[in-house]
Length: 238
Image 1 (cartoon, rainbow, N blue to C red):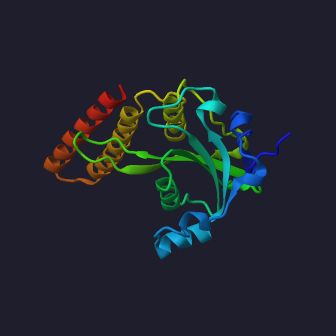
Image 2 (tube, rainbow, N blue to C red; image 1 turned 90 degrees about the vertical axis):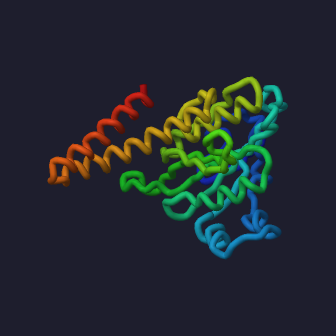
């Protein structure tokens, strides 16, 4: 039986992906230089490649034929790429640079040593994707790197949910960004989550400002803003 490629302890099979999508071990390793040898790159970004990325491994390649689904109109294949990092922080600029070199979708499986004392010697994993961020109508959409939460490497899974590659890609993005297999109305849900986070930060600041304010007029003004922000948050979450 074929030995599959691994990034640390993670492989396509440990992620729950079909064996048909797994990359053979002998074809999985990608030298870091492949990504920047023939492309313009800043010294800062090159340093991130060399110092913060330990290895890059192709774990899986999802196509209509090996996933048993129809081709998509927007997405024709999805690469599952393992990134073993040194340190705790995800090198988002590196992920964005890699994603920009490829037309099809990439799910980054970022692996690091666990930061929890009781999990010394174990690994953690976070999913990441680069996707056009939803914005206002008429404005050029910018590509944004979304990084999910860290979880013990043995607990992370990816599910191929959908009947087409477009639906699978949206579902994989939803799994990475929102922790949900449901990829429907993804841009609207991402935008709503962003709005919730912004309002929560605003409310926390207003609460601090209100607690510090001494003058009654100032306290009333801040409270009015706080009441409005709380109502907006309630409407957005409702």
